[in-house]
Length: 158
Image 1 (cartoon, helix red, strand yellow):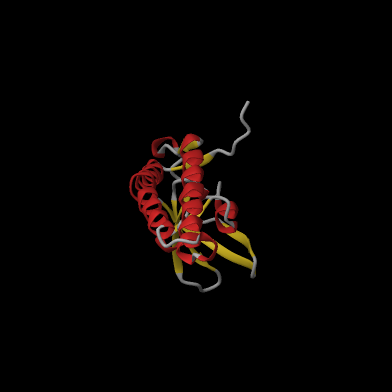
Image 2 (image 1 turned 90 degrees about the horizontal axis):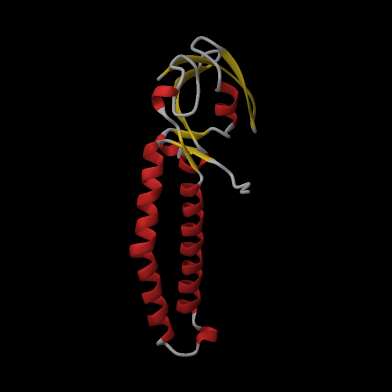
């Protein structure tokens, strides 16, 4: 019986992970092995910074491959059409305003595996998403953030 974490994600998010995995296995892994070969040719490995650097990168690449494989294996795809259209949930884009007179902000709530705040995608584990999930347009929500409480009003859900 497996107690591994489930990774909720959109179909697009899973495809992105699969592409990254393919790139790591087919391109990056080979590049690192080649760097290690070249560094070995420099001789004494005990004081060879190129070799140490290449081995560190190899460990990172292999670790990332393992992480992505686990996330893909335990992915739970969020089906758009099964979502309640007027309620904040995973896979939805939420637009809100910080009260009393803040600017409008929009974020898509996704699983932690595909969160990217710079692309407007926040994790369902984030304080904002946790506070808004299950709420509807017009609801006022108190969001607990590390900087303190933030009052927001949900303007739209898409």
